Image 1 (tube, rainbow, N blue to C red):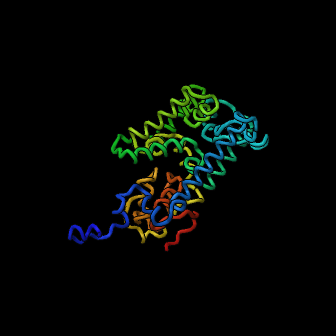
Image 2 (spheres, rainbow, N blue to C red):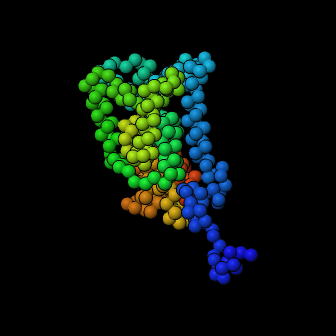
Image 3 (cartoon, rainbow, N blue to C red):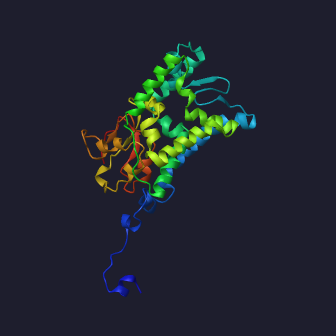
Length: 303
């Protein structure tokens, strides 16, 4: 006998969002299946872990496919790659870069200028996995509030790190860079490096939701500048299907970028062109209505 028959009341079937008072993406799992509702997350993790593994194969197993770290590396003894933000600090510090560093910085900068600077943040940077873990645990624990700094804080810090490099004659950000610290921690074990990574995790968990990547990290600010000409973009071309569930806003590390495209605020096309968008695919994964998809900046069509 149903609950409605037992109580003598007409209880409507529970479906959709009311069924779960759901965590972001739960409805997408119901509608699309777990794999499809996590497709872009799985691809990002595969990419991040794969890149990290290439760097770790040498120190761990003696297989030196890539030497160095994400700041400066040499692949197969031939291809130099240099973080252009590191190169900027080096020049500001009065150091004359080697021609290999200039070549490597040019290659990396050209790639991100073409495809999107903040692809680094969501598809390459290993600290992204740390901040994603903090965001996931924060939602699980139901933690709300916190003191979130201005989104412009990272740009101020970007300028200050370059200024500090000029004043000290050293690459200032590398003293505390969590990306480099994470690499060192994996190679050399626990120490100050792990303390800095743990600090980032606790900051996002207890103080500011998505605070590090979305508000503080000067590397994110630098790659955001390179993101202005990005070829790869997210579009909300099926925005007429939106049911205002807000899941995309809940999971996006830069939620301010969604509204202009989704709600046609100050623009008529559905492309997300804001330089802070990381093209991570989170909004695509969690949307049960398939409002979003990845495309190019030239695709302004609307379904």
